[in-house]
Image (tube, one colour):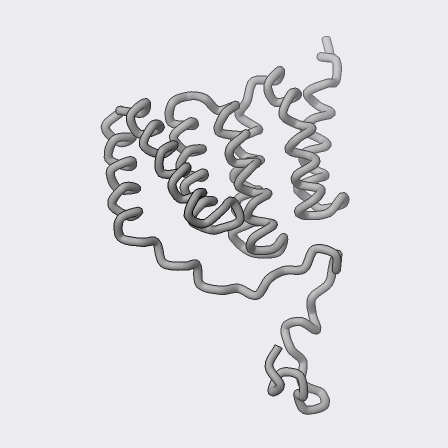
Length: 180
């Protein structure tokens, strides 16, 4: 915090004034994501082209290699790492592996919460994405992954958030006996 922000005139209301919620999970200030290096952009374009051409195994292998490279350079807690793992989730979805895609998207939603904060728009989008994809799973897979989803959503949004309530309802409907 700058000295100028520290000594605001009396009565100045800042965005932080309106912040509510769990203070143990601070939201980091919105910042522009770091620019993606040109070499990584080229590799991502090649992965996208292979995926669009239906060469999903090749695209997934390239995404895996890029993930290893980016993680080695930046670590797990970096937006570039998160982004390539989201690409891997998308490729799993395109290949019809929605269970794998949900796993990847859960992982990246948690990473986004850790890196960008629980209240960041990208984190909210990531949790909506994983929830939406989870809802498309067959009941057995949805039940199996529902606990992990519920835990992640509770950690990110809080135990009484609409996302958690919807997930609990959906999980209850999956375990309820079918009415005859």
